[in-house]
Length: 504
Image (tube, rainbow, N blue to C red; front, side, top):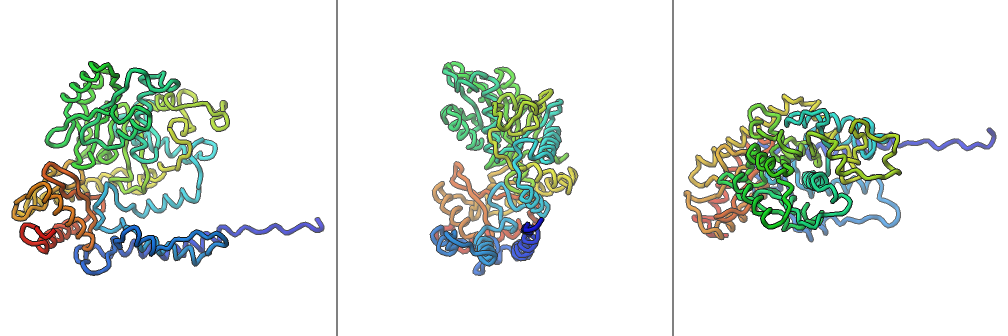
């Protein structure tokens, strides 16, 4: 037609191709530096560490000098410079010295999965806009649930935004199931109470605050010498709560506690829950992936007795953060507890049949949902369950080796069991086997942790009855040589600090 304008061409694919190449040139050396530094770990004192460039917040603010343009953008040059600055001033979790938290780097397939999710950029709230990701999530959740012994026709689960979110969702489901009026009328007049061990994750108390029960609704249960919940004490706490005219409704057991890595005795706890008709949830955020290992899955014996279970592949399995599943034997219970009418989103002609819900946001608390299940699915396809088993077994072997190194030295006192129940090794540095006062031990530990950063190690510490102790976390990529070099670095720092470590 005369006068018709030629449509402007889209060049997004070419722009993406160009930017990916430019960014790849920055991130590959970032990962390569971590690989190259592994044999040198512990010798970085006085040189710039690959792990992190330590700075105080105000120093980093000045160094980054971050500006968001009020007018025209800074284009490719500004983008790449900002990426360089972020890489240079971030913790390199790919580095072997990152042994601080219950997660570490991802892996190459993890980066690929994040890239695919970024390209798709869809919300996994309704099937219509995320058909493939919905099928992936349902299939992956069911396969994972089956490993824990949830094998009914509606067994499966959903992803949530981290372990705390999964635990929160489980409490909401339990309350709305066992006290069904609360879904409409709120918490009942007779106070609801829930139980977790003294070593349980703080997210249980935070969840109680969030849903209006208050943190005082959470009753902590004593643990044994290994950090496992005492079922006898649990039963006594439930009886006491009933005598106080409150309504016990939920028990949180733990598979892999945050500090000692302990696994609670699930069959005995389940028996108490069955006696009083309480919802049993297992927080296996950290220790759950042991289910892949024929050697270590016995730690999770009785998990099938739970009503719900949290597991975070982004922890032990090095799947990208965040990837957390809430699993159960009957996802229809999840749906009934959380569903609300929203005709603009969940359409009547797409309503679930036979209690199978394909609009996954109708099972969870959040509407905006990233396709996090894809991260585990692609890793599972890439490594296979057998590959996961080898990774988990290898990590447990390194943790056991680490604990044995601590036991063999006269300058350490092991706090964990030997071998440790999970992948963290807890110990005191005690020159010639002598511990000081709690205050002295805490001061020594904190100072040594601080000095370790300059040697390329980032580890954590936790409070204990004799003061704070080291808590070092092994992951599936940790090498035995890294453990040897960490022990040597701690011993070297101990020597620098002097006899009795009084120079704190």
